[in-house]
Image (cartoon, rainbow, N blue to C red; front, side):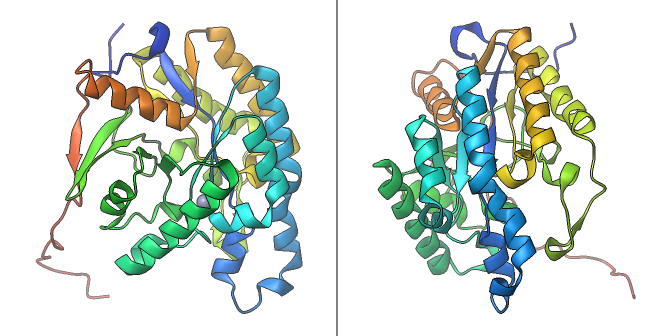
Length: 304
Ligand SMILES: [Zn+2]
């Protein structure tokens, strides 16, 4: 076989690839962030979003328990305080809670001080719910700022899962040190497959679960063949709906039937990578950010 990844990490027990069903538990955070003036009057949007903590999370916990797997849930601190029952279900079954802002704020629209304030408040919520600080972070809306990396390192995070610079984990380096990056890609996001919500400016044609699974499964089959990392960017209120959850069950069955798959939380994957690096058993690619010290001058711009 023609290998397409030069230097895949050694996965535990000789596994072919690592898999984490990572979910972003956004609930109504985006509603309150985008529509502060009339969020309380948008009842039907609110209803669809709270399907996540009310219906989808118990369903996902049930599915994971059936298959004996644990997953990572990136959750804004406000959602932890607002939906304690769903959080308790996740924590009780050993799923990882990781950081996803306070109210899903976009860090690259905030000052450094505000980004840090939001980061610390989200950390406190996770620590209160789980008894320990979060190990990982996924930036809300992918709005990673020029300060994000340094703030994560200064606040003791082990990994980030916001970027998309490789098919396998790598190290990102900034002024404050380095961090394990567990990358994913838009192809593993459920938003472009399923979300059609005018309030969020998202008007994709809704795909059948089978067609969406074709995309997700192709990424998995390639990760399995070449030693990659498969980690999804799924949302409970989107992928936890009945037919999609049913298709997810089929995807997990496909993965388990192929065998030699390491199902793990992102924290476990991050710890594994850090241990490999510390022991000198694997040398990941390194990338320094931010990439550009300043905007690239343009010779000409469109006149209109
Ligand atoms: Zn989110």
